[in-house]
Amino acid sequence: MVNFVCGPLWFLNADLIIEFISLLIALLIGIFSHRACKFTNERKYLYFALAFYLIAASFGIKMLASWLSCSQFKQIVFESVTMVQYNLNNIQTIYALGSFLHRFFMLTGLIILTTLCLRIKANKTRLLLLFFIFISTWFSRETYFIFHLIAAFLLLYISLFFYANHYKKQTKNSFLVALAFALMFISQLIFIFVLLDQKIYVVGVIIQLLGFLSLLLTYLLIGKK
Amino acid sequence: MKRRDKLEIVNDILLAIQNKGGKIKPTHLLYKSNLSHKKMMEYLSELMEKNMVSEEEEKGKKMFTINQEGFNFIKEYKKIKEFSDSFGL
Image 1 (cartoon, each protein chain N blue to C red):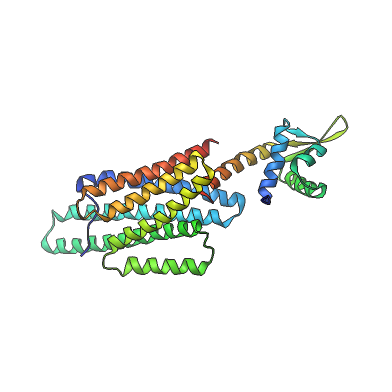
Image 2 (cartoon, each protein chain N blue to C red; image 1 turned 120 degrees about the vertical axis):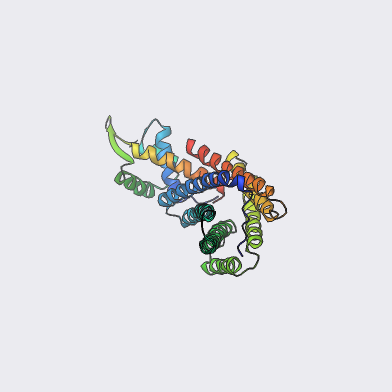
């Protein structure tokens, strides 16, 4: 049975808007990094862009899956018992596929960021990490917890790297980047406890949004230069 | 001391011209760019090919002038450097 852990129903529309904002911010960072890659011919910018494109795609897929599941769910009220069963199966399939792709894209994006932060350049190591991500998101019984646990762990590594970078650079932008990823790390920790109370999901989403807004501010400050 | 990469050298050359009011004498540029004469001429011919810099004569003396493409490069390089520093890339 698919577990619909996506917060309270009253929050659904706001959640979609917040995810759309996060998607746009991730896309902006990805496009800028792509531009940097074309300018410098350095692969690290291409990987960085790819990581943010994957994060943006992951939000897009989650939005689409949530929207499709909910629109199918609303139809059920007006239908016969056989159609109800048919539509429930549809919802289950859409949600399961959407969830898997969302988790896989998000974790792949985070893995790429982690390999950049840890200066891992061997493609074999990258593939190995990707393989473990695939196994854990597809075959795990507790995909929801495993996903947020891995995301939190990867974001912890990324946050520590950006904190060290800020310690070295001491600029407003390096601080905002470190803050952004620290907030994203906290949000992933919060998401782990959603089953205790659905309101926790709202707190997690808002903290995650603050993280992305911090990235947007960095982007705008860089653009102003 | 860290070795400068190609883009950093190009940026330094263009900045040296910009800081001199957009025009610079070759001897002054040689001093400011911290390159050998041969290397500096290689870079300058590439910059002229890309229309970032042009060669002019002023009172019988050779001068290098920065063009709009050169100003655009400086602006873009500054943004990318800031992006790279912010994200520790």
